[in-house]
Image (tube, rainbow, N blue to C red; front, side, top):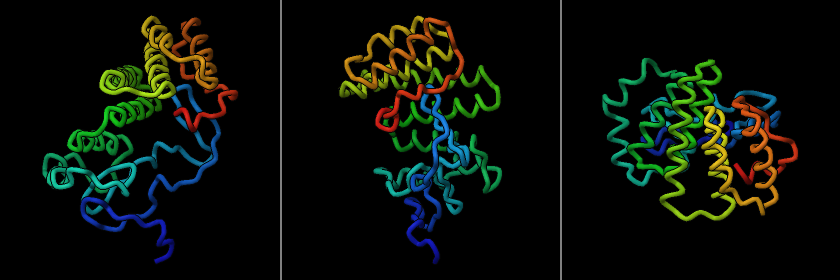
Length: 224
């Protein structure tokens, strides 16, 4: 087969799947204040998840086999799961909603849940559905909060979690909560200090809009 190196196997049914999203190469155009990446080629959100069209398993990285594989396989084969698909070409939103169901069966980390809820807010934002977007922002905030409660994080990661809570709270118009979260960031770290100052100004201005990440925050890839 051509491009054999791009072929991965579905960890649930073993079928060959092409075009693993984590292999994609893209040129960045801009980055939002919540770290959504915009490229010059395409919307990464549409290609972030991968689906097996044989068993309908969904994940971001098919090279990772679920620890509770038998439990995941049983769920994926169930009517409870399969009845969520009207055809074999689900929309991006349908992919994410079913990915959430799989994350629950896999008993995935709080970070994966927070990240998934955050990405779903982008789908609602794209469709000007502010109420639903804010509903999912709150879900993301709750899961980010659980990360802080359940495990010890290094200073950079902890500061980034507080940044996400501040950013998502600001987008909901909850500026007091956003400011409290921001106050927990460790500004002795250079890139964290830049993010702090950027977010602080938005909160002070009572600005709940999506904003572009400032260009001086160059090391976004090690922060996000």
